[in-house]
Image 1 (cartoon, rainbow, N blue to C red):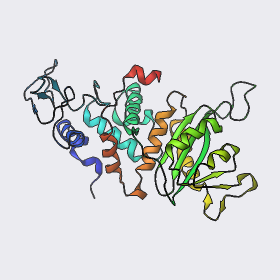
Image 2: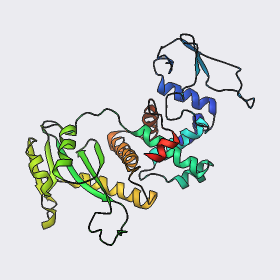
Image 3: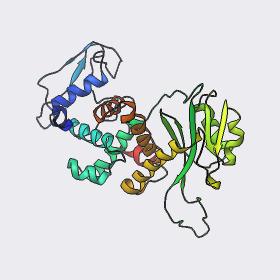
Image 4: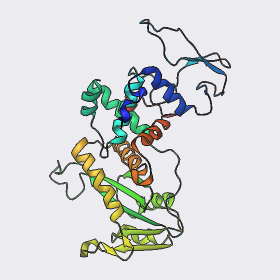
Length: 310
């Protein structure tokens, strides 16, 4: 059986442009400048300053402006060849626990700085902009929190989890997950998150943490398990699904990425959420997962300066 990476769009630039255009413009070419559909055509024989053909160049005859499918996406203004972007996207989408910038740098033959920025642009493409509430009538949703960061506190007076980043995740059993970086884990912080992202008709499952007691009353049912007493399953009540997600997340963050600042944690969460939500168990293979990630590149321009500062 031939490898997925043998597809022409992973090695040929014209094929890569053709493939991306089919993903981004399924109903015809859309001008990123004026938004008109079907008024643009390819421009042949146009050279860049180095005398190379400008592959994928289009001209809109409504606003008279030129563009490629990169404009208005996370690929805009990138000097990296589009087929290399396809390779990077596939590697990130097919690696269950992620792939480091160092590995992308070695595999793709780009600089380490370029590999780091490429991975952040692709994480931005994976980020979901509009979401529907999880759960519903008769559906179980699990909520839990975890902590990520240095194993040892730098400050002598830092105790417990004070030196770590708090992450709250919600998962619908058999469905999707949502994760969010929060400054503090308390009822005031979690209530608006759970109310906005979980259907109130859902059956909420948590551990015995006091922060969920009052929040749980706002859902159809609230089931808890006493982890502190060694209880992990009681009938249908458990948080094993979300614990499984945390296991994958932590193995990736500790074993692959090793370090993540508070400023970038949201993008790593988007990456792990995306792969979980587009997993094999839901009928999504590596190729389809990559296509879905590439379909999310539109309207998410990320400059290097913004990527470093956020």
